Image (cartoon, rainbow, N blue to C red; front, top):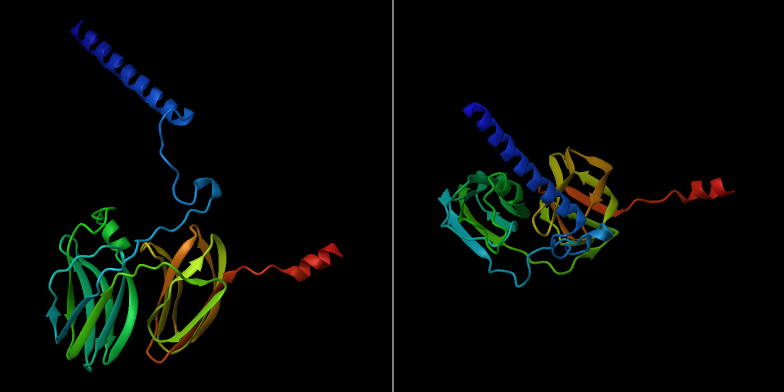
Length: 269
């Protein structure tokens, strides 16, 4: 008899939970809850805006030294960073960024000999993989750099706050490793045409200005010329991080997919 009463209580409890679940589920679909304002860009348009950190841009974080060094701790206020590094030695030069909670986060540079370049680094994937990023101003931990070098070096860390960008269609060209200007892209499919004249590794990565990784547009060895598709889901400002040998020339063009007007005219005729 006691066992039967126990089973009845369990069944009754399950019924109560089921009723609550049905009520909550129904309220969600009937619109009886206050869902708050829509995201910027209005979800009905299907093209929200990229929302990056607002100006003014924080002060540049700078370090310098000779040979191998562990830098002092520093704080960051955003995920997208631009590193400018110079190395005057003839041996190996590398920079790794560490977090006080997450340890190794990102290899920023890994070069041999004289070097002077700028790159974009996003901590988006590294920090989210450890689930430590706090969506409030400032990141939830401090950071430091491990520098490997055999000569004098300088490092400047920028936290860019872009407000304008180059309009599409556009072509960006240069030599060696480069952090591009900001570019303004609307939603939709784009054609990206890439040319590289060099013998070494060549890659092009696109980020939005909030620091979100968008796509790897090229990842090649040696001379290359080709096109790929870029799908943009949010209207706003983006940047390109181009990695190439110091003497390698390259160009990247981005624009709408061309329509085949000649075929359309023939079909109409």
